[in-house]
Length: 354
Ligand SMILES: Cc1ncc(C[n+]2csc(CCOP(=O)(O)OP(=O)(O)O)c2C)c(N)n1
Ligand SMILES: [Mg+2]
Image (cartoon, rainbow, N blue to C red; front, side, top):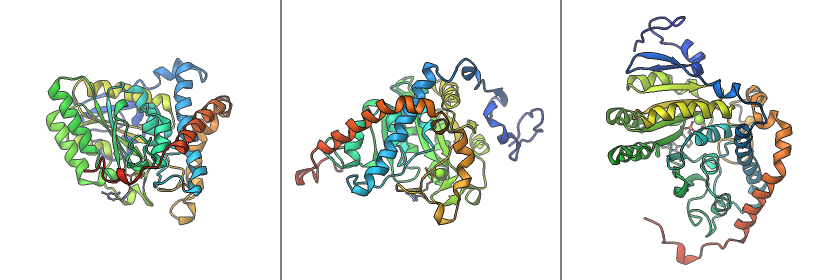
C-alpha cells in the first residue's frame, strides 16, 4: 500500500523504518494522514511518586507478586490447572485496563491473570478458581486458562489461540446495533495473528465499522518460535490493508505510556472505528509453567536483560518495598480464602456444562 509520504520515510513506507519509531507516529489509512501521538504529555506532568503512577505501579506489583505466589504454590499441587505466567508483561494489562471504562468489555487469552486483576476481578475468587474450588469465579471449572469476570467486563479467556478475537468483534457489533458507547477489546499474542480468524475478524470489523480495539501483546514468541521465522508481515501494514488504523508502542514496560496510548486510541474506537494497537512486551518465564526456559536453547537470559533494565518493578525498588507489605497481605488473604473453599462434589460434574 502507499502513503502520502512523510519526511524521512519516502512515498512508500514499506519496510521497517517507520516501525522503528512508531510510538510517535499514527497513520490513518482511510484519511491517508499522519498524526503525532502526544504520548509523553502525561509523563511530562508526572513525577514518579504521583498518584497515577503509584496506582498503576501498585496494580502491576500486585500482578507480579500474585504470579510469584503461584510459583511458590505450584509444587504443592494445590493449583489444579496449567498456568501461563505474564511476569514481564504486566504493564500491558495495567496500562490498557486503566484507560478503559468499567463497562468496556475485554476478551483475552490463557495468559490473562494480569487482565483479570487489572480489569477489577476479585483476587480471592481467582485463587479459588486456580485451586479448582467452589468459590472460584467459575466454581473451579475454568482454571487459569479460562478466567472470566463478567461483572467487571472480563468476558472470557481461552486456551484456543485467537479464539476470543471474533467474540470481541461480535460484542462490538452488538454495541453498535444498540447505540451503546462501549468498546470491546480483543487481547491476543503475536502468534495469534497467524490464525485465519484474526484476518477474518479484521475484515468483518472494518466492513461493519464496529468499536473493537485489537490489542496484540507482542512478546516475540509463540511457545519457542521467534516472530521473524513465523511471519512475513508487520502488523500495522497488515492492518492497513483492511483500512484499519494502527499504532505500535515499543515501550511496553511503561504503564503510563500504554495508558496514554490506549486512551487516545480508545477514543477513536468509541467514535466508531476498529483499531489495532500492537505493544512490544517481554515474557520472562517459560511459555507454560512456573519455571524458566533458557535451557531449551532458543533464547538466553541475556536476551531479556535490556528489558529488565527498563522494568519499573525491577528498577523502582523503593516503591516496591513501600508497597510490598500491603500487597502481600492482600494476596495471603486471597490464598487463605481459596484454602478454605470447598472442593466441588460429584453433584457439580454436570452443572454449568454445555
Ligand atoms: C488454535 C490453537 N493452535 C495452537 C495452539 C497451541 N499453542 C498454545 S499457545 C501457542 C502460541 C501462541 O503464541 P502467542 O499468540 O504469541 O501468545 P503468547 O503465548 O506468546 O502469549 C500455541 C501455538 C493452541 N492452543 N490453539
Ligand atoms: Mg507471543
